[in-house]
Image (cartoon, rainbow, N blue to C red; front, side):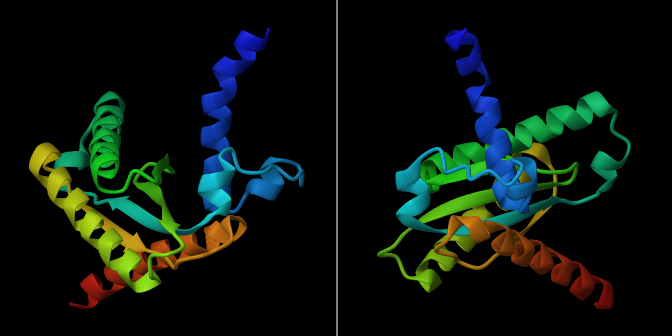
Length: 173
């Protein structure tokens, strides 16, 4: 029975992470206090969310559901590969159809400005890799740096507001 339960652990961790990122942890866990899976990562560092939006282009507009799933899988692989090399203390979170997020865990010694600059560079690298290997366009939005993981959904909101602002700026141009 324990082995069977351990098989569900990765799923539970992904759902916990998604609920922290989206701000539904309290509702998802029935207001139970659920502490982070890896306390050193979550309690001893600052955090920031990068929002990712897959742009609706001609290439993706007529895809079958199967092809769409394959693109999302390939996109996740590219992002995780870049993160493994450039910022291993991070986690990729799939959200809804055209959106995803990355949680960046930031050492306390690194200034917020320097962290945001490095993370923006990583985002530009992810954009370039996605364009090169998948011929897909994505945009990134950067949220604020937070010390308390329980407020991470605020950074998520800021990241997606950044994406919305980019959309509004494009429409006005």
